[in-house]
Length: 195
Image (cartoon, rainbow, N blue to C red; front, top):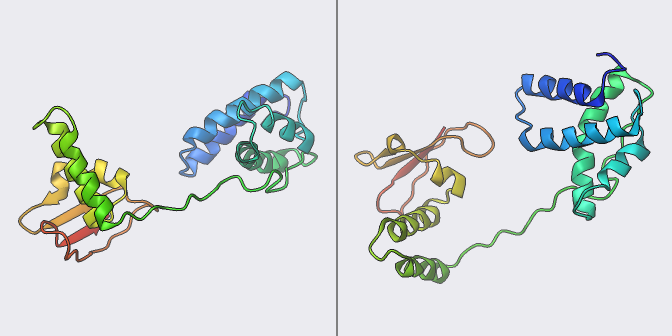
């Protein structure tokens, strides 16, 4: 990598490198390209500094430490990569602005809340249409199986075996895994196969 190349080219090389290792970097690529534009505008030819990286993080339209922390977290990966090519570059310490993520406390619905939610689908329009039936089915599926919403919405016709009472889940969270789960509370599915 040419140390005098624009930062946008360096970041694109890094993105290609990471994607070649199997990382998607969908949102990270957008953030890194903003970082590259900022660095190109500063005129700093080849050296990353903590001060510049922090200054870039603070240019976010959302002025919160979590947003700044997330931006630094993404820039840190690139900085570590770039430091191998340009040892004089600096890498921002982790948690400079505190944690970059916050874990929200999940809400576990009670049986009464689930019943009220499912009954509420009767109020959806068009009455007797596909929308109320779809919402009722999805809510019931989520409640009775414990599926994540993305797993339920990614289901295809071939994933449902009514004769064997098996539901096949593809692209589950934490990559591919397989399991069989007995679901006594669900009248239709007696097992779920996760692949």
